[in-house]
Length: 209
Image 1 (spheres, helix red, strand yellow):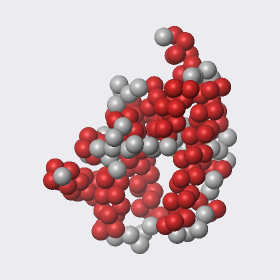
Image 2 (tube, helix red, strand yellow):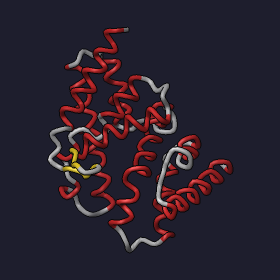
Image 3 (tube, one colour):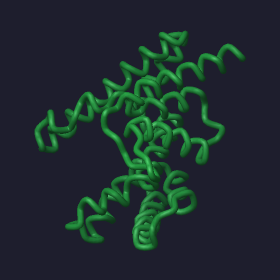
């Protein structure tokens, strides 16, 4: 419906306007962009490449995955596994609350809002195909846009540690998502070899289950 298309475009623009206020900037080419606006755009771009048939709910959830993330910094929580889990739980609620509020303001009904909120909260992973699709895109965006910087920031990590991190990422993804890591993602040769090795191990483990 035209009304739905207009509402969708309005909501995406509202998400982007919020994320454009992120004070944290990331270098892109010769310029710098608000970090979470860039992340949201990368999520949408990867979703379009990986699953162009995705529903409006998945497209909306992808665009508000990290909305106003900068308001809840990691430093506010203890540097412990428990602190990390508490931080992540608070972030999921934060993004879902803001995303739902924006959708309501743009005219979406509660059923649609509830569906997107559930996706943003990462509910029913492995059971809800849309939730798993979104998690696949999260993993692919990490590999394409953030893995190289992550490795550069941790020169103390050897190949075994990197493989462990990659395998943890792949465990959250579907076999289709893992397979796409070798076809959609372009990385420097050394990183590409590690990704392919970890993806191969994940595929073997998936077949053995």
